[in-house]
Amino acid sequence: MRKGEIERITGSVVIASGIEDISIGEVVEVGEEGLIGEAIRIDESGKFFTVQVYETTSGIRPGEKVVATGKRLVAELGPGLLNNVFDGIERPLEEIIRLQGPLIGRGIKVNALSRDAKWLFKPIVKPGTIVSEGDIIGEVDETQAIKHKILVPVGVRGEIVKIEEGEFKVDDDIAIIKKNGEKIGLKMYQEWPVRIPRPYHERLPLTTPLITGQRVIDTFFPVSKGGAACIPGGFGTGKTVMLHQLAKWSEAKVVVYIGCGERGNEMCEVLTDFPELKDPRTGRPLMERTILIANTSNMPVSAREASIYMGVTMAEYYRDMGYDTALMADSTSRWAEALREISGRLEEMPVEQGYPAYLPDRIAEFYERAGRVKVLGKPDREGSVTLMGAVSPPGGDFNEPVTIHTLRFTGVFWALDAELAYSRHFPAINWLKSYSLYSSRLTDGLTLAPKLESISQYSHKVLDWWRETFEAFPEYRGEALTILSTAAEIESIARIIGESALPDDQRLILLTAELLREGFLRQHAYHEIDAFCEPEKQALLLRMIIDFHKKAKNLILSRVPIDRIRSLPQISKMIRIKEEAKELIAIEKLMDEIMEELNKIALEYKVW
Image 1: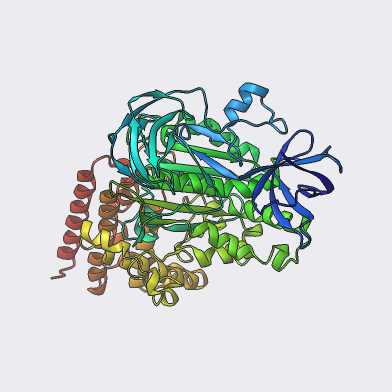
Image 2: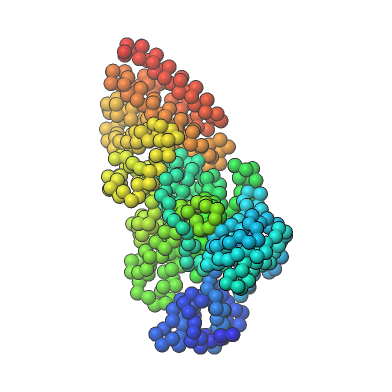
């Protein structure tokens, strides 16, 4: 056993000595209670090393022991991850409650995966088969929603000598591999260092959108499977509810939700609500395909820093099985604050707003682990990790360092607007500030579009998927964005001279923009019908509004008064239909009514 002793303590940072062969990233146990920590710095003499402790250090003192474990900070990966709640260093909170009660005691060590639970293992290979890293050798029904595929660990290759079906614990040998004359036992779980991305065979282009059921996202600012999205917004703009909606409705097969430094009451709401939610696709509890990582603001700040890496490692593990996974981090600003605090205790030179100089590198390390890939092993399969990180800029200032650096490494910017939120418009995504680099075309109506159009490496042609599904969709989308952008300019003039003083063609643009805002962009997160909007319905609603605009525009050019068009009773129906129509035929019927009424107006004013 390699032992040292504490020399100095600064909050969660401990300076120790006495273990000369310590390595960066090695996990150590600090103090008499064995607090979990990680070596993050070794001085040039090799005598002293710095430990980042993942638990509160109050009460420990210089002279207490430090014990090196010889291991890195790793994630245990295997059956039992789903339908579970962990803290930032993967300790199962429900098991801790069972052992200690509602308060987490210091130094408690609990296996992430239960060593008592048994799982029915069904092999899919036979003795004599040559297997290598990433190969699927069997399956376990982890939940009714997910089949857990048992993978050969990275770096292992050999001939299957023994494998059989049966009930096993995660640390039992389920198969024996012969490698260079040596027999190696394979277990149902494996360990992986959380700060190292899991390997894959090939990175694939991002061509398919991750359907979320949220119209403003799927239609205007889509994220692709394997993409990365940034969700910045001030207090009260709806970041957490939006992440809940994405977790519930997105097309991802497995969801990892990280509460990173958020308020305890918010995380408590997640922990109580998620087990009650039903998966809209299967009717089963949503938790059957969800992993929750809870590391609230009153928990040790250094564990907050580790929670992000722990979550993305779990997402990569299910990606390697061939699943589309989605990770929601709420919020990366609190993670960055943990970096800042630890950096300050290490006496590193701060840069903008006190953050360490390596903040952009750490943000890049996280978001670059997103991607759609061809994974290792056989049978051939593809998987993806989509990362969605909320950012909580102080005062809603999008020019602060975390937001600015996050935008450099993400392909989607969903800008939450306080004015929209305070006017009860949700999701409060500002359509003039937001953008998506995963679309194959960006409309000039967007503020940032001309700058982003030239960045060809980000043009992943997600709109081609929409074009193949609904042929004219990209054109309708472009027309809608142009109307919204033009309406913003007209509204600034209308505030000065009044809307009635505007020409009729501009008043029509304002009318259509209102229909888009109220009848398309606004979406009720808790409405039985409107909480999720399938792509077919999105396309039909958009087509209804844009076709109305085109027909009305022709009438306006033929001297038909705008007030005559505004008086149509179908206008209000167009706003309500998204919440009333359970079947697409109801929208098609309303479209026919609108066109019929506009044709009557054309006859009335003799427009041929």
